[in-house]
Length: 269
Image (cartoon, rainbow, N blue to C red; front, side, top):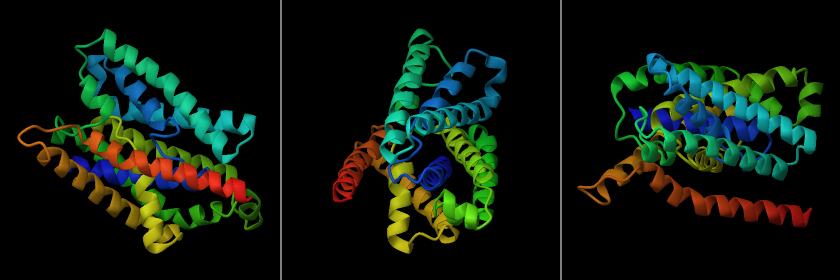
């Protein structure tokens, strides 16, 4: 259940971010969303009485990080590469705070290694109840607004000419992507690359209509996370490795491929 929920949430968050930011390289782990959620998740462990609010804290951190990246990119010229570089800077900065907290407080309620890499071995049913509800609500809302996501993907000027309130819907989708990513990170840790890989795979299969992409991305993301989790449990059995390692092995080369592809496009332009 944890693998299914985390895969669905992070993949959908990646799809929404790539569409809203008009950037094929966007993803929760790439542009700092995961780092923001991770920092706030680590911070709340200083308040044991409020550990049940970890999903909401992770959402707040993800939202703040996303808005910060968007603000920096907009102020410095919101090109595709600027967004990625801004996200990398924010991710590194927030990640340093998270590392510091987990280092000086080793008895924290979350496992340092499992959280930073991303893992599902310590998840309980109680731990995924609230995140599961938030992920389901977010999925339904993204699906309901999928037509508006299509319009937004056409660019700001075209979307405005079609009557879409661009600022309003961009903010709505940023909030939803943050809620999806934050909810998953609250119990699965900083799983990387799944939000980058899966939306591209879904587009390759069915095209660019978000009304179809949303459910297909959710299904593919859940399947991919489940597949990686099975590998993590069996490849070195009886030892289990964090599922985030498997995702990084698969996602790293794909990210490099996308970078080279973007560079070729810039050169051709």
